[in-house]
Amino acid sequence: MRLKLLSPGEMSESQRQTYDESIAGKRGKPPAPMMAWLNSPDMARHATRLGEVLRYDTIFPAKLSEIAILVTARHWTAHYEWYAHKRLALAGGMDPAIIDAIRDRRTPDFDDPKGKMVYDLAKSLHEGHGVEKGLYDAAVTLLGERGVVEVIGLCGYYTMVSMTLNTFEFELPEGEEKELA
Image (tube, rainbow, N blue to C red; front, top):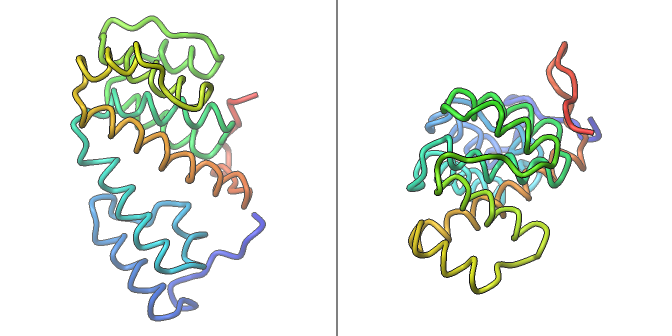
């Protein structure tokens, strides 16, 4: 870990307010990257609120939103993010074969067209830096404009999360092994 993470007793009033807000939210605890973001309390507050919306209040169930998050974690080889969201994906009902394929940089076999579309959008955003017209039109037809916006939001937010976790070298919990090569 490159950064000393503050305990609640070491936080300024602004940092403590953000920390307390995160505990009172739907997560019940502060997300790991927020502990680094607290060095910029306003950024931490807004980023944490956005993360809560994207995690709990999109139109997607976990097994779909976690596709975008795992594609993002894989793109950035973000070990901590992968560790955390693989478990959430499994708890949300995602087929382990899809997770393994994303980990191994293979295109998964989807039985749900919405899952495939979320995957295709996320891959296009990360690898192609955008979405070509045919894919965009198909995505709007299948997911709606809100769905497209929310996939973009998931990929963008979890890119920031992945960059934070990688830059400050967040360690996996003791006993956990890195799965991404």
